[in-house]
Length: 475
Length: 140
Image (cartoon, rainbow over all chains, first blue to last red; front, side, top):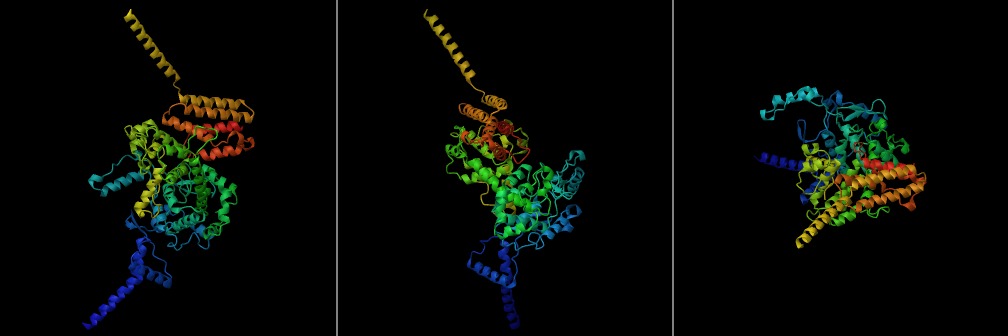
């Protein structure tokens, strides 16, 4: 009895010591919240962890929790293994090996201490976006029919799918590409997503984080946009020949080329470690703007790896700044010396009683739309919407709800012809359209709403603000 | 006699009212169609004129007329307003008369293009394209 009492206390002490050393450590880092250690006990635990880590040289365990399900795995994110993906999805493996050869120190192709950049953008954001984007495989009509038959074998009677003729199924679009023949040539369309291995995620994430740091691009601001466009896939290839992680079109690349010489110095002249790493990889930094190949027939320039995704992301950093500058310039234009009747956005906002509204947030919406529509047009659309709203402003004053981008049209609304037919389909019964509705009805654009939807998905899957900026695209 | 006078007065008022309404109807301007006619005239003038300074004067005059046409008339249907604004806003990136230099034409063209061109090829805006054409005609 005495012996067992002593062993009880030894056991209890050991448990306590183990908890202090390991349990508390795990608890803190799995919380994914930097404000977690708020109480005195938690602060003690945190200090113990720090001491423990410095003694052991361990890196903190990375939080991979999510409100999501990929395959059989629920609520935790994991990397795919080449053996899980099959030959049709392992087509980039040799490219990653080639990247390792030009990056012998593993600056991009290797792992890093990801706790250091978790505040900028956790690595799991990249993993989640890459896994979630589109489909692992593009299905043929035959495969889709087979999938419906397979589904019906196990689904309850209430959830059965209609099995149609093969001709009634549509081939999935092929939204990825290969650039095996010519690294600066025409991409070959391909239907299957590259296997989302840890090497692949690291290469993308390390590149994104370094470009964000070197060129002062806010990673959480661009994450929903990149999630919407390329899903962070190096070889994404859109239906209008928009290619690579930045989904560059010829006009966007021409803009990058136009601004390259001004921005190049920011990278080549910087003492930041991120910039030093960027310029150490061959092929990332063109010598001059003439080396930036913008033609559709050269789209592999922004896709082929190595040196992409790094080169494409450097271009993206330049594109971000030049588009923002031009979009803000178009928005802020208050006069036209050739036209005394011109009224700028701020004057119209004042007339509409919007002086107290956060103009920077409105500019942010216009800037996001500029990624797609070019820097000048969205400001025109915004001014026209204000003029349209001014017609009925007494009866229907503008409120914050008019700027709500949590909006998505229904199928029949999409089918209605752009213009008055769409307004009719929106069924507002004489009430004026919100900004999002106006852009949809008259300009067939849901781009801001689509990026906002991606931010909502990221917030829902990984926690509000984990991969997005707070109050992103909202007033 | 008194009844006849009243009857005549009524007929006069009726005719006067009708002619005023008719005149008002005639005065109502189809802004959008006028706007396009003015663009067509500008394009024709620019094609005829060889001197670039005179071309630019012609453009500035038309630009002002287009703006006045819109300012003096009620707002049109949204699609029409958007088209007209896209045209005007594209050309707003051109300089005022005293700053205009023929040798800088290529820069003006690049400025207008990079500001107003869409990054997505499927977003066609005929009035932006038309503005690009006007810049081409000025700089030719």
